[in-house]
View 1 (cartoon, helix red, strand yellow):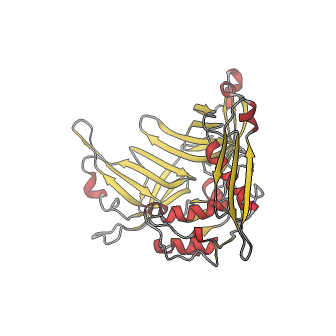
View 2 (view 1 turned 135 degrees about the vertical axis):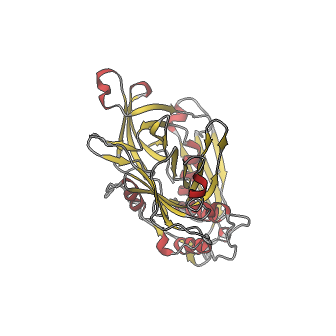
View 3 (view 1 turned 45 degrees about the vertical axis):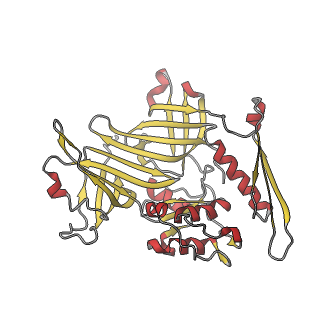
Length: 384
């Protein structure tokens, strides 16, 4: 039997310089509205509304800027972050409530400029990441170099043998790799990681995951929207399948020049074709120039990354499902990013196959109850 989902917010550290700091371990579990966003391409955040006209006096010390919280769904951690925003919307008819938003520490990296003195020559990517994030208080222990660890933490499931995701962090040895003011910490790290086929995103425990989108893993979830008597297992409230080929190249070619240490400069090139776009009669050859790529391997990664960035709309789903978790029929499993779902929809193509989940929004409100919005892209499209 499916039990109602639980949503709790636990205070783990009082705000700095608080005059009357609340004790760690304080828990909120009743909200007018709540929303938790996990995204592989952006910092995670959670927003909450609670209380009534007289709540500010009691709650203000809990929602002060800098207060550190953990957010749990059904006892499994969803994100760790700090209060960055609070407000008190007031309405003559509805009264007043307290609202606050928790964002992860990765948010600082989106705004803070990187230190241009960070070394890029004679170091590898791991050393660079640790150095560029050091001003934010991150150390080596705050990075997770196996994406499946974070995936297991948020879903409570084991993803053993679901695709290799241990990253091989190659050395950096390029003049073009220097930090370029006013480049942010996140942008500097992302530029180097993507050049080698990787990304970085939030882990539920406040650490940073380093890896690549892994759509080769086995599906964790199964989503269905089918007609008539076969609809007993339906769990899709609404869905939009989008197949937008407007900006997808029929052929993408990369040209540049680079050289290894002690070697003369040589011409580097790579190309990829989209057979589907070509077969449909679209002629869109595109050329990308990329100086400083010194090996054919890096050129292949760069061209795959560029084509993926232009092709995410080729076959995608936006799905709304009931509850904060996915119900398998026997167990409740939290929705997680960097996971895969199998989709079947009679009105959108029948057995659609496997799709990679890169954004999850879990929402609770008095009017809608608990719902989750999932954004997915067809397996095989997002390759770095």
